[in-house]
Length: 329
Image 1 (tube, helix red, strand yellow):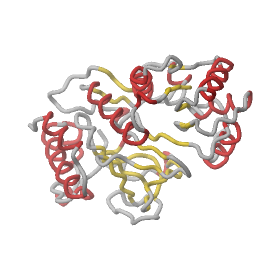
Image 2 (cartoon, one colour):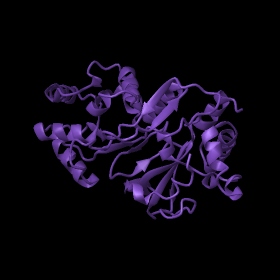
Image 3 (cartoon, one colour):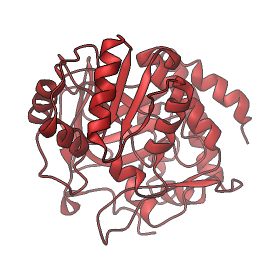
Image 4 (cartoon, helix red, strand yellow):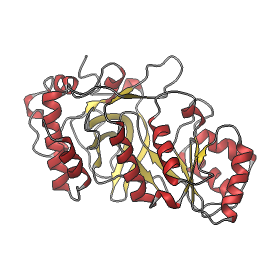
């Protein structure tokens, strides 16, 4: 078994493709031997996929299995469980987490790498749908950022949009660096009632209408929010219940990842055929910080990569998912 403290240092030291691949291959061997679900998946595949020699060759576990199986290294215990929001009557994904402190350390390190010292910011979280349920990884991350910022106006805001508006006016007058992190429908609720010219404000949407509103294309959503807050661009956060790391976009929906996270695009019809830059297909995610459950995940998101980062272009319909049924567990 790998020494986890040493492994974490290696993850945070990744600075090129070779160092990424080295850690990824070590984690592949770890999970092939000590993760019963991933091991079962690997040995259901042809032998050619069981001995990768580069990270892009590592098979990615269908994300649907987080809905039906406990995915965790065999010797680990669940301390908390992240749960997907889902819709009424749907089956939730559950991410069993054995080291919440590692999730927090990783998330704060990524956030700081994009936005600088958290102590310099007021962090406002407008996440009503997440706060009203248990098991949100986003709420845990936001709570840690709020606490670390130590600003008197940092905090969660639910239905009191008037208070949020007044606080934003105060923060603007104080020239305080401020980040407003919000679920899309809640930001739209604010935009319908208030307008504020706060060009220094960072407005960050986490996506999704959660059944509260009609889905909008990204460009339309961002234009409404830019007009309401008087900002030049809208930032975005990309995370998943099943991941440990987040990606961020500062404009135009082009997401950047930390060095220990990579996006690989697979062919929609052949889950083991990989596509080139600017070709659209299913998104595989290698998140090396996801040490304990599974670092290699085949998602249901459609996207493409380019030299600028990656874009999310939609999701597969259930009937379109190929490769996720390769393993009837």
